[in-house]
Length: 120
Image (cartoon, rainbow, N blue to C red; front, side):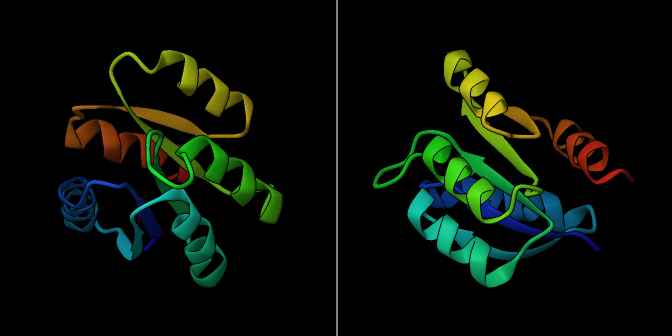
């Protein structure tokens, strides 16, 4: 069972992603409300994969992605973006994000993205 860290400043979005993933056999080992907390929790929990919102206070998802990849160049991070954030998504992919999911997202798409990244 893959271990997941969910990073998003919106509590309802963290809950939505958690519910979706747990329903499909993933273990959500932690949640973070901004990029700074996400980086700290990544170090503590060492999850198999991370969902990372792009736009957050304190430290953006892109900044957190860069920090996580410094800690672990093999980190698997999936960026979660709203419509119209294509430039930021492109920057995230250039900086090592494995994929991206656009809000609002379909459960099947999230699961397929995770399966593809984790090789299942």
